[in-house]
Amino acid sequence: MKKVFVLIALIIPGITGCKKFLSTTPQDFLQPGNYYQTADQAMLALNSGYELLLNSNWWGGTFNTRALMCGDDVYMTISPYPADFTSNYTDPLLTSTWNVVYTAIERMNVLLANLNNGKYDQQKKDIIKGEALFLRAYCYFFLVDQWGPVPLRIEPTSGPKDKNLACSPIADVYAQIIKDMTEADSLVPPATTSGYGGNGYPAKTTVEAMLARVYLTMAGHPLMDASKYRDAEAWGMKVINSGLHSLDPSYSQMFIDLIQGNPDKRSILWAVDAQYIPGYYTYSNEGALDGIAYGPVDSGYGYGYVRCARLYYKTFSLEDQRRDWTICPWRYGTNGAHVNWTSTQLYDRFPGKFRLNYSPFPRLVDKTPVNFPLMRYADVLLMVAEAENAVNGPTQLAYSLINKVRERGWGKMLPGATNPQEADLTPGLDQQQFQDSLEDERWREFGLEGLRKHDLIRWGELGAALQRMQQDVTDQNQPNPGSFYVGNVSRFFKNYQPRDTLFPIPAQELQSNSLATQNAGW
Image 1 (cartoon, rainbow, N blue to C red):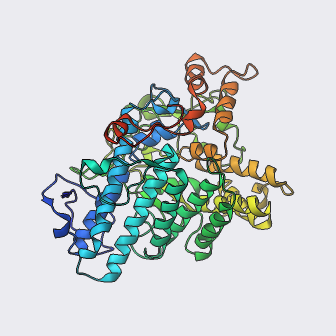
Image 2: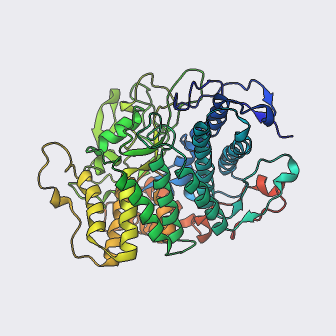
């Protein structure tokens, strides 16, 4: 009989009593049939899955920085890591991430299989079920997006014999994702409920926004099912029509709120909740690995492993206030002074989105309270605009949605701002021109948030984007960035192969699961 390894030590007083997922040393082993008797026990089991989002091998910092930043917005200055396409199926980082995500799935499978054992209010059971279904579906969306065909486990494993399971086709994995998320949408509370949305549990509009992303992904590579554009638009419009969400007028303040652990759920539909509590693993590495290099901790310790690309910098208009927040225009000098980069130092600059000098005290090495965003309202607007354009062309609706994002980016929603229309997209574009503009808008809006590689792959443009980076860094008509930067950027193009749209199935999985098969090219 499968034993449940109880990790959570904090007892939740009620269904919405707390959104913090704290863990301590394991206390006991319990059989599933003897657990899940109360709402508190079921909530602890639910939290044991959600806490894994913050694991350092997932959204706690390491995986995002070293594996998902493989697009054309940034590049790594250390090697070897997945970010320069030098990984293989023995890569310990990829293996650890795979294991963490499947651990979350297993915990939700056990919870779902035993949820009816409880003798408490049915409404609470339904909410817990909805949150568990959503997390399981989100885990599979993450896996299929990064690895493609994967073992689809929707029942608890009871022993080694259950490890042998063939990788399901991508379409089958997506079918399960849609099934789970659609049911979850009918069960979880709205964002008006305390503790749901923002850095709490996913709310109803969180689920709907993620369904829009799932369907939009299915419409692109590798499935190329154009019928899914209509589904993506329909789910995104549910979020818009709810009236519960809006853009934060200040792009930079939205990220300062995330850095300080207080995201506004109107603009942040879902974020990984990090905080520093002595003795608990509730912190992140976000902002340290991919932030501004700085040795002392008084302004936030940063390694400076990630730099921004000149090509990315140049996609911003001078009036676009997102540029100098996303790409920090200064570095730390003596005694923490801010020293501005010169106009030609466009490969030197550090990411600036998660600036630890805004983080609350205490400030520690490798421990940050940054809440990493997994779904923003701006994404909903741009997803609906993309889907609408794909189905009906660049309609008034598509233009209005992209222009909202552009106007906020240019500071036109701030008090005292005038002439918001000067930020608007050029009218009269054809369908392909609008799509090209939308792709650039997503680049500017979501750079450094782990979405660029995902977008480039679904558009079928990852290889071409990396080639443009190579051409830019060696362009003789532009200032020479120096051998250090040329060498680091060149690694992207040199090592990339078409197989790199998916990660390799880890060797550990192939050894323990005799029915699993490796991805093509690996």
